[in-house]
Length: 460
Image (cartoon, rainbow, N blue to C red; front, side):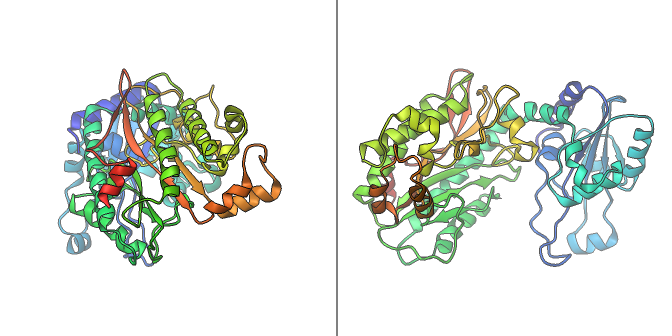
């Protein structure tokens, strides 16, 4: 945890922004895998962590804005709990660590919410993403489960997004730690992988590195020789000479701040000429995008600028043709780059995604596109000092998408489909790094991690 004053200040700011009512911030519970007592590793809700910092299951934080009070609801450990999990810190002591003096049993919350509603006090909550939260809110608020999410309080969502988007110096330090561990994960994978190994063998190095550093994975690792599939996780697929490995991974610190890095390296010691050509195009788009990072610039414009650099490079090797800006405007580049350039990052890899991308990455005046490719851009809004985000251009050669578009002659004025046959087994390349937006530009997180062709080959 940070010092309790950090959490007190965050809650005080939230009260000022919301103005009135009862704010419910639900912590997560243990969740069973395949039978009741076989739990998934516990992960606390990120907004609960942000405002209360307590990393134990079964807690709910309530902020009564009108009375200026704060309460932690939870249950004390029973004898059975102590036998199986050891002595637990009393609820009062837990609450004191986050600057809260009042605690109540979890069962009391239903009555307190009922009393608040009888006084016509508004009840504010964030959109639930876990079914147990949805059912609890349904019971407490007397609304059908399917209607719970639509009753989430938008001003509260916007207030939370406004706070969590701007990272404090202590948050930046935690993210730096996470990214440095993520660098070590990438180095471990690149130094270990060899032809004849299964993807899962290489992925084991990511887990070992993260756990040894006192954290864990921030998200299920993407490690694959089929890099054309954007979120393809490791399998028993064996690495073969001539292929490339796309490794997208991130560590999460003990305080749950995460990193997110991608490197693509050859199974051989060197890239082939064809692989080098494509890699250099991606690297040029990356460096061009990074040069544009600064406050007040729309990240959507940075994304589109990177797309133009990708098209420019693809034209130089004969895969695309025509007016570059028009090709990007119409979405022809999405044959090779069907995703977004980056996303916000912090306590969540896709920071605050459960609160709604329309609030996190967009504004009332900037709506998310519905165009294939561009609709997957999670962040479009103007950048601000204190934002933490990823930059991750790539080129992906997906045979299924090639066949679908070429069969329809889609964007035939921009794509030379007859030349794509040579890339059917190419895979994909992505380069990803994490940045803090500063008052004058940006700062790259983490210790050095090679990303040039020469640097990657030196690692191999």
